[in-house]
Structure formats: C-alpha cells, structure tokens
Length: 464
Image (spheres, one colour):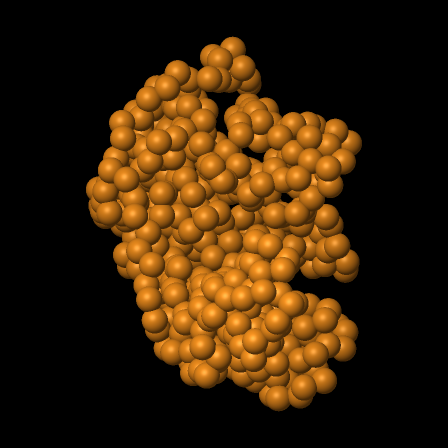
C-alpha cells in the first residue's frame, strides 16, 4: 500500500485589488435585508474549484470587514488560494468558530435553466451555484458575526469568523493548511459551527433539525495494474485493463457487509418517531432490518443516502486504459471514492479491500484518507440549538445526524474541537435544492428566516 503525500507550496502573501466596490456593499437599514444582496453578490464571485481562486472571496469579505471597522487577517496557501479570518474578543469560555468554505463545485451551463453564477432573485428564489453549498450559510455566519460586533455587549468567549479555500477538493489548501501554518486561529477554541446539517419540513408540517455530529470517512483510492502491452487484434490471457476490470468486478459483486454503528442507530430511531409509513418499523430497529436482503435492496433503490449509512461503500468514478483503440496498454488505472463508517481506522479498511482483490495483480494507492471522529452532544452549543429552535419553531425536533459526505469538520474534530454541522434553513419535503447538481437555488423567505434564526442560536451561546 502506497501513501500519496499532498505537497503544498510555501505561504504567499495575500495580494490583489479588492474587486467589490464600496457602493455595492453600502449598508441598508437592516442586516437581514443586506444578507439577500450579499448572497446574490457572493454567488457572482467565481470560486469554482478547480481551480478555486478563493482570493476573490477574500476580497469580498475583506471589503465588508473594512466597512464595518473589523480587523481581519488573510493568507494564501498557494497562488490564488485565499483564506480570511476575523476575531471578536470575549471572555474565558472556550472559543466559538464559525467555519465556512468559499469554493463551490463546477456547474455545466448547458444543463441549467439560468446562469449558475447569476445570483438572480426571481419568483421568490435566489439562484446560483453556492446558494446552498455553502455561500448561503456563509452569509448567515457573516451577518451573525456583524450583529455580535454591533451589539456592544460583552461576549463570554472569543468568536472567530473563518472562511477557507478548497473544501470541495479535500481542504488541504484551506483548513488543513491553516492548522499547520496558522495554528493560532484555533487556539482556545472549544466549539465550532460548520455546514452538514439542516432543517426539513415533512408533508404533514413536522419540522426536524439535523445536527451533523459525525460523518463517513472518505478514503480515496487509486487502483493500478501493469502487464504486457500488445496489439488489440491479439488479446493475451491477462492485460493491465483486464486486471483492473477483474478487481472492480470483485468489488461490485462483493459489497461490504452492512452494520449499524450507534450514531446511525440513534439517527434512524429518531427519524422513525415521526414516520407514519411502511418504513417506520424498520428505521426503529435498523440493526434488525439490515439482515433482510429484500429490505436492503429497497432501501438502496429508494433511499440511497440512508443506505450508504449502513455500510462502507466505494463508488467507481474514474478509469483509464489505452489512448488508442487498437493498443493494449502496459498500464491501466481506476479511482474509487470510498466512504467508511467512523468506527474503524482507514488503514484497516484498505487492508480489507486489498485482501478482497488479492490475486488480481492490482496495487492500491491511498490518495486521501481522513481519521474518524464523533462530536459529543453534551455541550452548551448543542443545548442552545435545541432550546432556540424549539422556541422559534414550536413542536420541532433536533436530532444528531451522520453525514455520508465529508466537511472540514473532520480537521477540527481531530483538534478536539466539538464541531457541528448546522443550518437552520428549513427545506420542504420534495423541494428542489440543486446541491452539487443543476439549478441550485434557495427560497428567499426561508433564507431570510434562517439568517435570523442562526443569530438567535449564536447569541444564546456567547452572551451570559
């Protein structure tokens, strides 16, 4: 097993003119109103990763901080890969970090019904890449930070606003780099809010807020095979391509066995309490349900995201053989996006996968692997989320959740910082979001309410 080390260049000083004009950021009567304008403008800032160019987001935020008289710092982990942070000084309680990433995934214009970077407000929706993931939540963090600054009240702890690069590609040019090169940002911090959770409203009107406390661990692998090349007209008994295909077929026909870890069990059991359909009994006892192959097949077909929480998974995402149709290549490779449950180290998973495909003549290289971590719900921050959402949305519920994807919280959990994915934005059952897909958008009214609710939660934590 080879480990590929990600090499990062030395720090470069942040530079570049601020592109956003003072007039465009003029403060209206209400920060809640300004949040709408800021989100529209932020969507228009091109930070598609690759290549990222998150320095543009740094320019955007820097101008706002200067307007409000807030000191800030910036750093580039590589040319154009900008990060920005600001701190409000407070008391001796463990600090709170408001963490966001400013990069967004690509968007193919031909499959969208509007310009992905338009930030257009139409028919009650704000449109564009990042409105959901996660420039919308980033603006909510900004507004909360500014409201704390303007309140004039003493804080019981430091509050850090931190906007970083590269989360969509693993975070090595963002939070990962900052931990190694700007560790003072994280010193004294005990709690953190990030993306990863959200509110949902069922067709019956029941509101549930999921708070992400752990996530499946990404283990990105590259399978490589070398064999004798030749002419396509004379197939050999083995080739680099057939070796890769054989290994992939073995993985396809032998899915990893299902298992239910305690956070997932609690998550499903909490969901079962508001279910009134044929799924309820199974979710209430998922440890038993996964023993039924017919149920697992139905879960996979109809609720793929929940199925992914019941086992380790590998998605086959990239493959390459010959660059010419009549040439059997000497080398072939494939890449896997594997996600494992956070109850074992990635080294154990890789060893299990290598044993499964042993004999195929394929080697396994680890491109990226994170460490598993789970945040406790025994904190003032989690209690504040429960109390505030319960007051603002009577009858709503808060449940700890497990994410199939990864966020930068895995970095901060490794530091011992209690890290939650939480966004009070409420999404109606069946509502189109477009996250990592086409036509990403957010309802203006729901976003506006989410911005207000977010500050209410933070205020409950930082004021005695």
